[in-house]
Structures are given as structure tokens and as C-alpha cells.
Length: 79
Image (cartoon, rainbow, N blue to C red; front, side, top):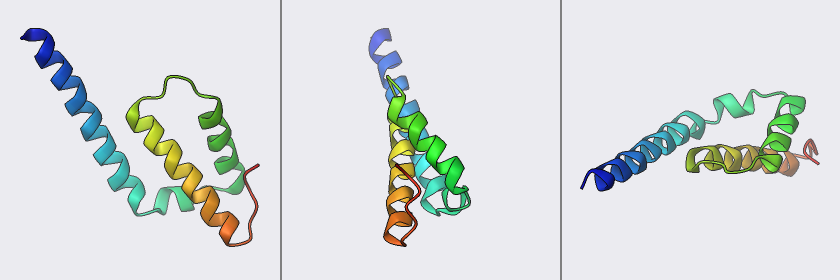
């Protein structure tokens, strides 16, 4: 039972982190304010990261989405 509660607590913590990440990044304010160089570095960090948590993976997906948005605007900033 204790193991189940610890597992549930970990999943709940991941769920909260995902919700916070989405709510903070959903507006796009923080990511859209990143310079092209900073976004490029964040993308590179994500691409070489190993063992990402669910929340970290979601943040990386948001960086990739922003990179694609800038590409659609004609700004090729991520390689």
C-alpha cells in the first residue's frame, strides 16, 4: 500500500508539473520573448538530453513548436 501511495504521489507531482508548464507556456509569452540564439540553445539542450521527465519533455515540445512557428514566419532559427 505504501508503495502504491508513493507511486501515486509521483504521478500526481508529474501531473501538476505538466499543468503548470502548459499554463505558463501556453500563453507563449516566455517562449516568444526568447531570442533566436537562446531558442536555438534550448532546442540543442533538449535534443541532447537523456531521461527527460514528462514535464521536461513537454517543455521541449513547446520549444520545438515555437521553432516551427518562427520557421513558418520565414525566420529559420533552429537547425
